[in-house]
Amino acid sequence: MKVHHIPNTRSVRVVWLLEELGLPYDVQKYELKPASLRTEAYTKIHPMNRVPSIEDGDVTMFESGAIIQYILAKYGDGRLAPAPDSDKFHKYLQWFHYCEGMLMPPVNAIVVQTVLLPEERRSEVALAQATKLLGRMLTAVEQELSGQDYLAGAFTAADIMSGQACIVSHRLGADVSDKPNVQAYIARLKARPALQRALAV
Image (cartoon, rainbow, N blue to C red; front, side, top):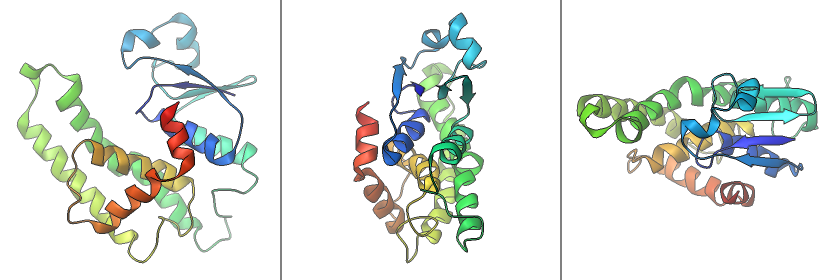
């Protein structure tokens, strides 16, 4: 399997999962510059010229959540996802999808206002709104982690999805000083050897 990857982006999720599962993979790395992805060959793999994407034999895919689900279904052997008849399955689904529905929209807005836009086009109002919204989204994570180490009980792919979003949120300056469960969660995830290997790729 080949993973098209830019460090410190959503493609970390795919590499992290492969490391957790101990699956072999190759990486094609790009720079965090649109031009590095805008080639005719890459457009055939990802029409929006973004990461992550994968090539697995004749299969090509993009969209991190879909890729995670594909890898688990094809190669996971029941690992990192509770069975549908588990009493944790609904929690797993909720937190698997929480990252893109709730956490990443304000994260994306913060990145736009602090990294992507030139300084003269940035809005302090938009940045403050996104930062406040991100804090609210992290409050739900704080509550869910009360009395447990991971979002669906044991470590699952939901932690790769929403956990990576929490790590990014903290890196971008989200205030978690009043969220001890989130602080401990981020530290717990960052201590996982598989994530450390993924971040070193």
